Amino acid sequence: MGRPIRPAIRRPDRSQATVLMVVLLGFMLSCGGSSQQPEVVPYTTQDRQIDQSGTADVGSPRMCVAGTNVYAVWHDSRRGGRNQVFFNAGRSGGEIWGQDVQLSDDPEGVEGLAENPAIACAGDSVYVVWEDDRDSEYGNRNIYFSYSDDAGMSWQDDTLVTSDP
Image (cartoon, rainbow, N blue to C red; front, top):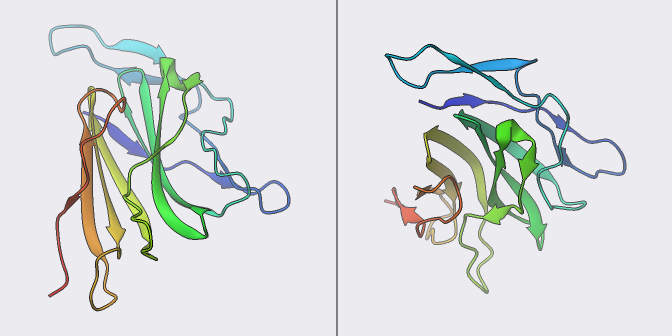
């Protein structure tokens, strides 16, 4: 079962937001099964910028670890100043990261916000929920959900979980 980890955020210079990983100092234990001895899996302790948000504001970073994969979600304002939810996956204990992916839908002409994501993971399955006001009639936020069954390589369409009364 994956364990959520909260990374640190550092704003080094001129409001450039950098999502940093501070993933357990040294090693984490990963069990291959109840009949096997625990395997020691090395995780990187080097800071890595895993978002492509440029100078946009970044907030609410969350992480989850499953096996040698490290998963991260956050919201940032790179889409015209409106926060949207993004995801990235680190392979090989966080040594190798790809391009980040926007999970929240940002329909053209809608001034919606998607913020405050949460993440859970188990094996290659990754689950993300977030607050979103894209279709709110009364300005309230709804909860949306999306998941991946292939370690974040592809994502199901986001699903509305709650809606305005």
